[in-house]
Image 1 (cartoon, rainbow, N blue to C red):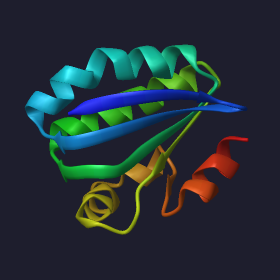
Image 2: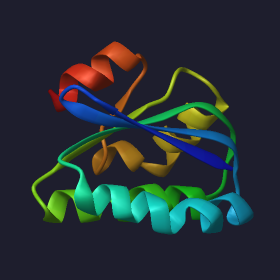
Image 3: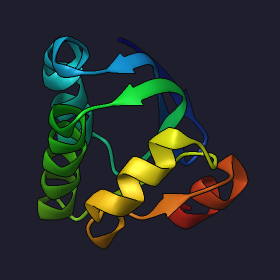
Image 4: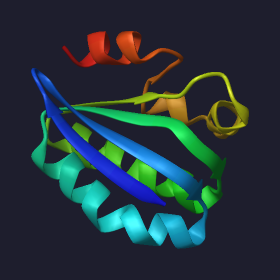
Length: 110
């Protein structure tokens, strides 16, 4: 699991790639939580995530709760893939909005 961070006008985009399994989740949990704590508008790009485990979902939800506690906006961009189906079934969008396009996700934090 890799995380790439881009500071863009008006928001930060964090692109995740690889398997968001237990090993991947452990690898990005600290930098992800730091982003959620420090940024005011954060788009999480999951378009290159090939697998999502329950631990990966936990990391996303924890980051969402951190952002909410700081009054920040955190949204997920995830095209219609197996990963988006996992997020939907897990109810992730109850806490973190999930958008099928990057433009929609970016507009949601602007």
